[in-house]
Length: 589
Image (cartoon, rainbow, N blue to C red; front, side, top):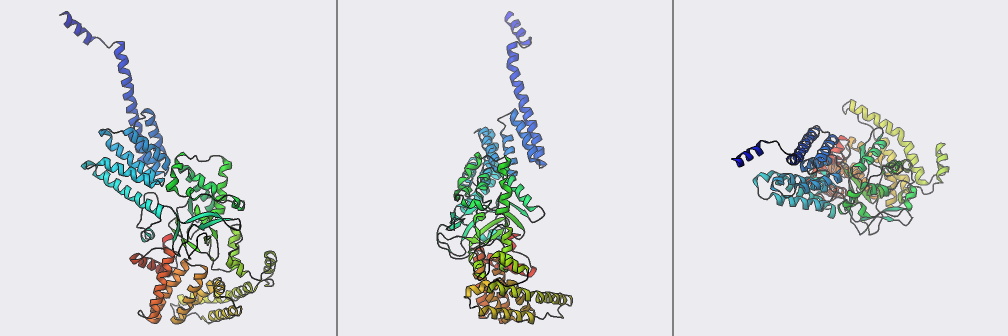
């Protein structure tokens, strides 16, 4: 009985000090876990509302209470992915993977963590690591039925990373899919690609981009997404500066790229940067340890980068790293085009190893005087071969400017005088032609403009041009400085129904464009008009149509690279649409 009483007493007595001490830590632990779950729940609410920063703050509160809360880490990683802060997303994803461990009860959380990690690596352009992480997650899924949806998602991630890896390392793009918006990736339209090019010291002491091996016309040289881009509107330069600053907050590794970009003429003395700096898929690991600048004196270079490096398109302006080092020429040997905000650089001519690559920064189918004004706005003087030729016989710039201010041609060379005379003669003729076009539209075609003054002026110009005894290439340069006249004459011939004469004019224009702007969109439009005009003028089965169609295909392939079949047909159709609607290039929209 005494043993029984003793047992009853022990069961009925309150906890001793030792038992209380043992119970309290467990109670505090449970409270912390419960508080952590409550904070995570608040984070989920803010996440659902689109408040990523607010959600991150709540997930941080949850992790402060429970450092092993893998779910909070996974959710925080997703917030950083949505903000495109990939280095931070990777850190969270890797911590979540470690916290989830190998326990079967944590399998779903670990799969989510591996998915977030793979996506963060994808965002950092570490496609090899991203693909490997996705594959490891696929293997963890195994054949379990409940994991089938997650496995399918991971397989898509791996496929995307493999595609981007091939693009980045080999430059193998499905161009038709890229142009026609069939290619989509999670964080970018496509991977960046740095082809057979490098930033080099040129013979005149400047820096420029040169080929590292021989390339053929139409070869892809560079593909890059912008460091920042903005639409044309008031305050665009400030928007670009803000964009660069925001890019640094998202990915501090871009600071090394920004520091090497040209900001003034004195920067030409700097050593050319290594191309691996721009190949993020092989040097992206540096991003995770990079530190974004916060000192005002460091950030002061951002406006200088914008003013010196910004490249304009039809609807957007932006800063692209490698293209910032490519020098301008009014008769370039490479061309750029934008697919959305992604810039592609193609060779426009066959180039030997070590050749400097040049592109045009602005419209070059205008007189040299107007081209000089564009160059002046960018703070430089164009000394390309075309500008040097068209300046033959000109006096120095200061004297020339003084004479022009007085409306005099004295001191101007023969080419400058000829183009100047044409421009003066054209002004009233253009004005009258435009007025007659308006009348034609108002009368629904009852009154057709008189194009004889245009034809006479064109013939006058050609006679004066022939008298200069220039080479064929030199004459092409002069004609294309007066491109608007020939374009207007072409329109006039269409209104007259003079299809055969227009055919000859378009062939001449295309030949001249191949001298000054091979690979340009103007050539695509002129070649398309040539083919369509040939069908109307000579019949669908005529030799002229066959020749014009072959030329149209050749011109489009030069501009757009390796495109064929139905994709090429669709691109030509969109060029026709651009002509009909008087809009820009379809892929830049």
